[in-house]
Image (cartoon, rainbow, N blue to C red):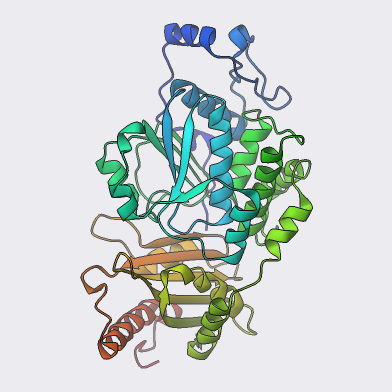
Length: 427
């Protein structure tokens, strides 16, 4: 069950340091920014063209003001926006929104992810909108000069699902902004924090920033229309086509409806599944076991580029009669980096099942205290590095044994929660 943090509690998460008054006076003379939306956020007296919103009762208003102050303190800098390894529409659209907002403060942002885009809708979203996201593998990162970045940003994740984070932190780059709608995964020191687990999509949070006036959308600007379309897709995706949306999400969708391109969104949604995705769905059907209305399926080895077939298989299995929760997992293999990781997805229609609690209880934490996975309403996921056992699959018999061990271990952990009185190995 998600916790509805009161504004005062969320306020304590932010470590933003307000600029000194004398510094702000200097800043007013050299930069002119658009005012925040006066209808939702009252402006200041407007000296120097800077409008800092007065504090109100609304958490969205308060956070919009704090974000603007943070951006003011870091203008003219360059930042890295780090997404989860396999970014979804919510993450991609919000990263783009942040980039457009930051441009007004002469902050240059590079949006990066370490994994791949394999879901057909994600590929279509990036291609059809020219969304400026780049893939940086660990090898790519080694060849990059990170000294040009003065800070990094985490959007729709808290670093637990990105291979890039350790190298970024090792380079001494500070965390400037963290915006997410998942439950807190651990302590991260950031100047600005906006984590709202009760909000269904990070796209809702960023749309509220837009409504507050951090960026004035214009229908005549193609980039704005495409970004609004991407945000609508992200919001729609994370709320199960708005069926799990709450009032804030509907209000955000209503605002975006003035700017998004319905034909473009329809083209993104009409992207066809590949044959490889259909093969993984077929494999999940053959391998599934059903207990207590849970459908659990291991799909074996997958190519790195086919990783997004796993959540699509979970989406399919949960539609079976008498099934309220589906968990699909497999070993994803990256041949280039000899990297292997167990990746799984959970989908549920059971209102009383909290995916975040279920996954955290099933798989626990690593030695550093980080959970192997988490979730939100109706969906969750987990990633378990294979470490020393990665690679070495030239011998098919060995590869089979390795899969059988991981398959049995994951089933055992899941079935302890699904059917605790039974012997999970035998069942």
